[in-house]
Image (tube, rainbow, N blue to C red; front, side, top):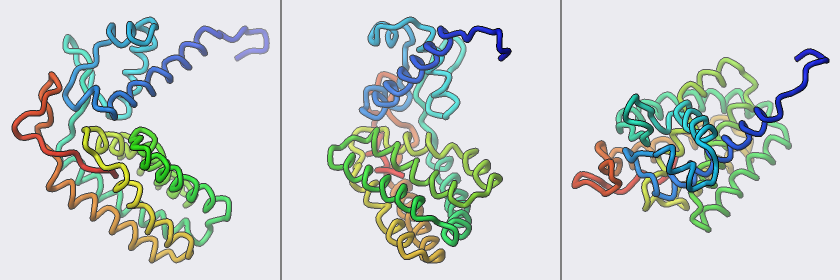
Length: 243
């Protein structure tokens, strides 16, 4: 921007509002108001939130970029329901990437880094006790992201983000019945290993973490999900309980 240019505050306000709408929609998805395969109607959301359709449309595009919803011509926006194999494939790769991240991060982990990781695990526990799956999902994904950031390897971080780890975390906590406490407790062994500053112990904890998630995914994740109206179909099973 040139010195003589006036900033467009309307654009700034619109962006902030779209972020707020996106966050409200994430909460609604995690609360089960929008189960996988259900439609999100732009006009209805705008009316419920007392806003115009523009920030809602922008929020939906943001959720699509995260992989949480899909937008189709003439059909609008629907909450995604990825297949079990899609999620399992991502977990296999994430386990390896985060193991590499741990080997790089632990030797250079600062007290400040560790404090942030402790804070995120504490936040997960608090949110889990209140059964706030939205907050659990945010802290969960942020914990894994913070560990990758501590590796200080831009290529690793870029590849890791390509797997859409944040959206995978949200998706696997979507269906009502998910156990937020189970999710939060999964991270305690990883944190214990980080406190000991033992890279291989952290790697083993991460690998057990993803093995447990994958095992539960294989038995509990429905390939079909609820029908578009939101009612569970005959093949629907309980949700995977976290990431």
